[in-house]
Image 1 (cartoon, rainbow, N blue to C red):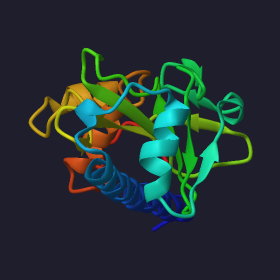
Image 2: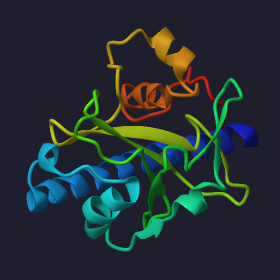
Image 3: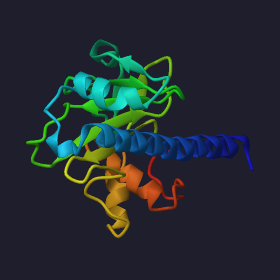
Length: 196
């Protein structure tokens, strides 16, 4: 194997490991939050900061709050060049003790038509604070009505793979990237559309 291939494989293995870890850590945190606070459909509406401080931080020891102003200096790019700042939607979040940065988007609203809370995350911060959908930035969803963390929204392992490949990395479709990886046994597939 050439050095570039080894480096690419190493980067993929980091993504795979951290995707699983974030899912496990967040799932457990939300289970404890429900145990202590009752079904999430009965929780009061709250801002991203309030939600993070009450329902995540107490169950993620060693984590620290990340302010909206800090997220304002971080940018995520899609495959078509669309750029967003991570404080869009008045987001705030926290940094896990293992380094991943969690972002709760738009707070918690039980009246949301989707019944979902979007939780985006950066797998590893860098000095430039520039990230890419499907490479360093991914999204899970918390289902308010089922008290469960979903790996991806709107897709399944039976979805048309060509659609997932087309959408992976595009703005608003970062859960397509998660679907491609999870449906491949938590491994980045060979035809993954984003290069590492």
